[in-house]
Length: 145
Image (cartoon, rainbow, N blue to C red):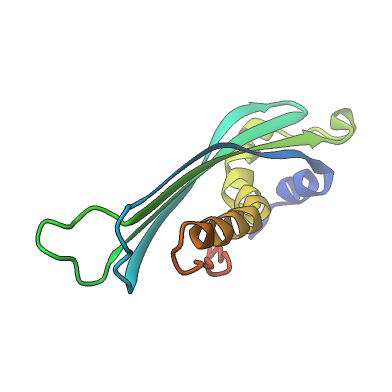
């Protein structure tokens, strides 16, 4: 259940900036051996949590390996790593007494992923296609509590 303080925070927060700050990618030189099995990892970490401002980093890793690897072929055929910087401002922070230090972790787990996920999906689909792999479309983000 969402607390009243958290609801107020969500109403007052404004996404100021979303930027791809790091992108690393690698694909094997040889022909890809499809089908590929995919693994992903996603996490969000706070950078700055202070009155009136919240900055987070979202990390996303993607690895694709052959479903049936050949002997000695355990390396991923496609690897992608992204780091996104997500910055929020609290509109009129003096209007309400909210403890962003307390509410920040909940905000990081819920709102940051919802804001950055569409950009990760688009970048991944575009980049995998440009790498000569089948364009990979991440599933919709589901945050289950």
